Length: 60
Image 1 (cartoon, helix red, strand yellow):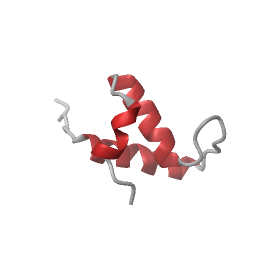
Image 2 (image 1 turned 135 degrees about the horizontal axis):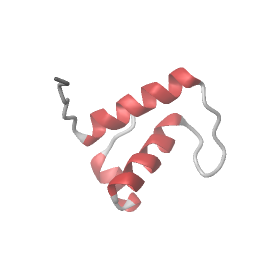
Image 3 (image 1 turned 90 degrees about the horizontal axis):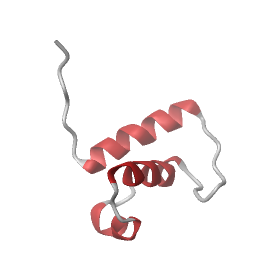
Image 4 (image 1 turned 60 degrees about the vertical axis):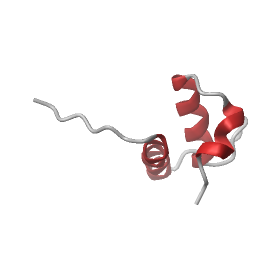
């Protein structure tokens, strides 16, 4: 049986950023770094308005 780990939004995005950083991806089509790309993709999948990003997340 697989255990399901539930994460809050910021922790999930942090995990995506870590994965992107390990892959050494290149950016340039609207995003400039792994954090912005992760936010864009996660928000898009979840249907969250991109304008509320600053209210929910603080980039460290």
